[in-house]
Structures are given as C-alpha cells and as structure tokens.
Image (cartoon, rainbow, N blue to C red; front, side, top):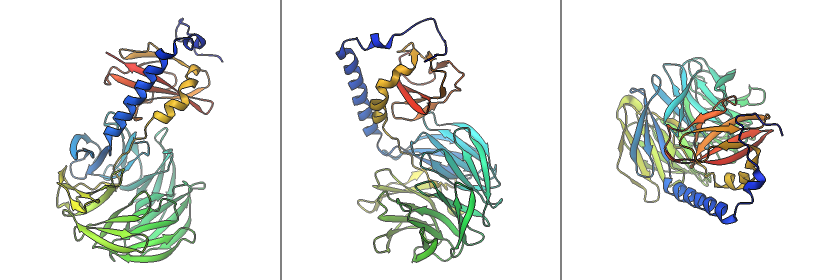
Length: 429
C-alpha cells in the first residue's frame, strides 16, 4: 500500500503488537469503561428549540431541563431536524430562505445553505446522507446532499408544502401540502411525485410508524389526524383530536402518537392499538413536539400565536407537567428537535485492529498532529468520545489541530476503499 508522505518517521505496526499485552489492553479497557460511563451520564442529551422572533436556537440539557447555550442562526428560524447520530442539527430560516447547519460538538453554525422560498419543514433519511426541505412559497422540495451541503435536486409538489417525512427505508418522502389539502408521495430514486392523496383541511405535521406502513397527518382546520396506509396510499381512518393540531411525533415502538394542539393548549395522545385518544394540558400555543430518547418525557415548544416563550415538559410515566423552561421569543421547533448520540464503543471494538491502515502522530498530542494515510483515502473526520463529529477536514489537509477543543479522547476516522478505519487520539495540553 502506497502512503502519502508526511514525515520521515516510520512506524512498524508489527512492532506495536509486540508491546506487552497489559500496556495495550488496560488503556483500551479504561477508555471503553470511561466511554460507557460518560454515555450513560449524558442520558437524553439536548433539545434544540428554534426561537422564531429572536433568530436564535436555545439548547436545552434534557437530562436536567436546564439551558446549556443559545446559538444565533438566520432570520425567523422555524423547523428542526437532528441527524440520527446526533452530530448535526439542521434549522430552516423562514425569512432568509436558508438552512443553518449546527455542529453539536461545538454548538456553532458550521454552514449555511440556500434553499427555496420560506422553508418550513425538513427531514433526514436514515443514514443522514440526504435532507429534504419543504419550501412553502416555492411549492417545492429541496434535496440536500449532506456530505457537501449542496442542493442536489428540486422537486415540485402541491401548494404550500409544510411538514415532511422520509420513510424508514428512504425510498419514499411524504409531504403535507397546506394550501392544496393533499399529501404528495415522492419516489427518492427518481425524485418525482408518484402519488397525491387528498387529506382534509390544511395539513401541517406529518410522521410515520417505525415500520413505515402508516403515515399520520395533522389536519389543522378540521381538528383531526388522518391515517394513511402506505401500501395503498389511501386514508384508512380519521381521528378527532384537539383544536388546530400542528406538530406530531411517534414513540419508538409505534404504540403512541403525540399531537400538539395549538388551538386549545393541549397534547392529544393516540393509542395506536385502538385509536383511543387522551389529552393533557400544556402552556399556551404548543406547536413543535418531540420525545426524549428513552420515551419518558415529551417536550412542546409553545410559540404559536406568539403567545409565550415556554417549553413544556410532560413526564409520561407520571402523566404530570414538570417545571416549564423559559426560552427565546416565540419558540416553534417544528420537527424532531431532540438529539440522541450513538455510543462509539461498537465501532471502536470492530475497527481497532484495522487502524494499521493509517498513522497519526504525535499521540498523545497537545493539539497539533499529522496523518499518514493511504492514497485511496476519500474522507477524514474526527469525533469526540460521545460519537459527535467535531471536525471534517479536506483530505488534502495532512496536519490538523485540536487546540480549540477540551482535553480528552477523540477518534480519527479515515475512509478508504469504502471501509472506515478508526484510531484513538488523546489530547493533553
């Protein structure tokens, strides 16, 4: 294997393997134990609340329900989508017609993407490679390649597209068209509308069952949730909920559907086994709605009608309202706004022995370090101990620096020939 030369220093990997087992195994075990402890302590992670009139995003520690920080974004931020690995958060800025990309490791906007006019809803496919954004005034969907943050396609849909949902297998995208009272079904291979379903009156929120067999749509002006069978693309049922239903989310096993009712300050809880509905009152103007990763708490952003600056928290185990969280002006948070992080432990275990395919040095480092990588390398990225991406340099960059980050353990990932190789890097300043 031919390597890109970065230094005259050589490292024989076979010599490394001759080091006493205890000197290798103990640090690895310590690292893995530390990772397990930290991941378990992180718990529910963070909620990203778009404050429509403040042009900010409030970041809430869901484990403690306290505010961690506030991030400035574009004008009139509205929708939220958190990547499935928790590394990135995407925000639609309605009046800017842009998308802000937040790196969750630093809580800094890492990119701004121009999309169509008045973007509202957005949704990622499962592997996070594609992001679909509804452009309300353009009657279109922007398809974004999240690797390079470029719009790869624009799809015409019905009038005033609002909520959007990508099927679990990534083959279909469902779009609630507020102005034409329809749901469009998009084939992601052809980027074309393959079916249009008449839905009711002013559909807004949309989500789907974990297996993708059922789509739930809030019908805003007739106070119902429509149920669509994806096998036939027809409405199979209509369920009465509270007034002006808006945001919607579903728990992991698909047994419960939660609906934010902006018109009467409540959340409807649909039991999907029998479609029975119960409700609980929250603060004024609930719009966006999301579940904590363990499903024990439900969060609503109460900014509809510009009535308040509150996030309500429902303890679903006890069916009670916890202390409200004060955020910025007119929180909307339309979409999935609570992040989860996957533990990197499994990835570390499976990839550790393959790390001989590249070299990084010095390790430990005070911040600066260099990489020796194969010519076949196509991508480099760095994650922290929680699996959050913190840096994605160009492959041409052979020297890097983590001085701006805290002391600790990081993981450098190199992609070559469609395989990912991972090595641990310790930063100690």
